Length: 158
Ligand code: HEM
Image (cartoon, rainbow, N blue to C red; front, side, top):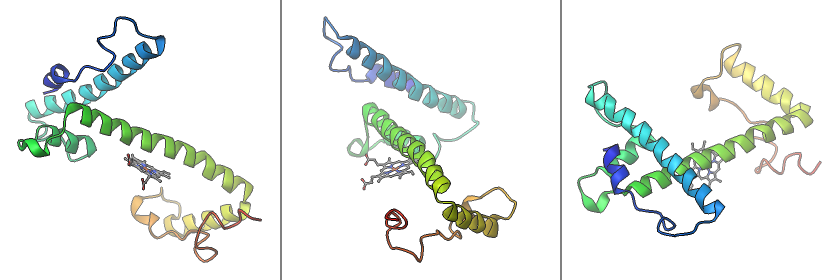
């Protein structure tokens, strides 16, 4: 299937241009790199299906997208470009937000040592000396719970 997707992929708008700017060439290389990376992951899953190590493309996000790509009902089917675009959005939306949120959180905790203390107490009361587990997170109290409806209001105006 990944071979098929390579063949069926829509040619980019710039592909028929005689002269391309350095940015366009770089952009095309990056786009191809992303496409190839996604197709490689799909190919690995295909191999696992072929060797009967697994019975489907998986029930994670990529697996669901591949299912939608091979959907029999044409009206529900997505194209390979849709699939690649969804992967890009998912990756970028997750990457940028998380990588900004982590240092920002650490910065706020570093300058507000009383918040730090609250969070530390909360973490120890729920997890003790164990590594944090997803299930425990909903038991955590946030320090601003009873201080302000909007967490950004709390302490920001101090
Ligand atoms: C601290 C971490 C994160 C924050 C603060 C955050 C925040 C947001 C916000 C505000 C939106 C827009 C919601 C709207 O349009 O109403 C959004 C959309 C989205 N987020 Fe996150 N997010 C975070 C982490 C992640 C992660 C880890 C993923 C995926 C692995 C992710 C995937 C997405 C996707 C796919 C969308 C929809 C984008 C679209 O509409 O095109 N986000 N996020």
